[in-house]
Length: 423
Image 1 (cartoon, rainbow, N blue to C red):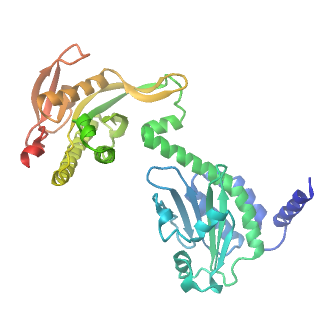
Image 2 (cartoon, rainbow, N blue to C red; image 1 turned 30 degrees about the vertical axis):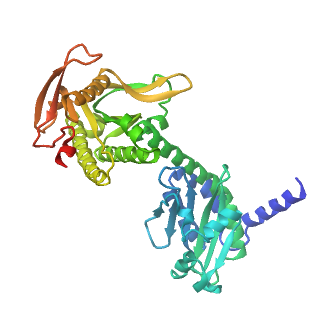
């Protein structure tokens, strides 16, 4: 052991020993035994704060600010206040880095320097301080410290701690907290990594599939037979849109379409299983809805809601002289194989079976019969909405002609070009 390491070892021994103040050793034992098993950042923050309070450290506020990878937010901040049961969770959106609340803030300084910053608020001119410090001073905070938490990917996260004790923190408090954070950082990194994995899986494969992957259903051939209401939808005239619109406007339009469909579906318990170009394959499982009838009702309600919201968007598009959005929906019900297919090194979680093929074929028929929504005989028999028999049609890959139904006009007018006629 060289002299530098020996000095560090002696310093750690001194901090862990009976040096006065709050006992660090017992806190570290708790953290690496019971604390790390809490497996939830809110629970860990609450328990850690209570442990520090019980040990004698006069804290009023602690916050973890942790980076994440997510399409909508840049991170998560978990805040504990003394006397409050609830942990506050803040999810800043992308772009917060250019706001006045972030620029010049203690958090920004720590991320730029990877060094501890400290503000003894009782000793500085608060009127000229950053808004964050002014807000803390208004809550009687006397001393505020931000510690960097550097994860193994190099990203600087932060741990902030504040006291309302008149004398603030002691130098020994800061040394002990620094050592405590050496043990806390890897625990927080594990939690954050799991959160990122879960978020990415939910975003790219959906929550149902994501949960299965996290639980270990990752081998080729892992599958199960499930009963579900199936939805297949396709955007009309997509090729014409790509030819007539600039790329930016085309992407805005298709993203607005996907957003409306996805929100309508997820709010009713469905899951977007995959995007296929401008098409969408969606699942409403019997398991999630309790009964297959309820699953079919949820799918139809989602389709009606999506159609109504698309019509509202189309009204605005017409006013702007832009092309409108039209889409077809095929609804069916049946058993499907839900599981892993692909090569040994590249897998996809999807649904397969005759019911999937029939759903896609029903959607194709919407173009021929002039309505934007059609459903199979099996699906129509399980819902309470009034339906109208459209006819039987031969389709590719199915031996017998498919009997299809539409909603009664009095329910919702899904007639193709209905908006254009109305306008």
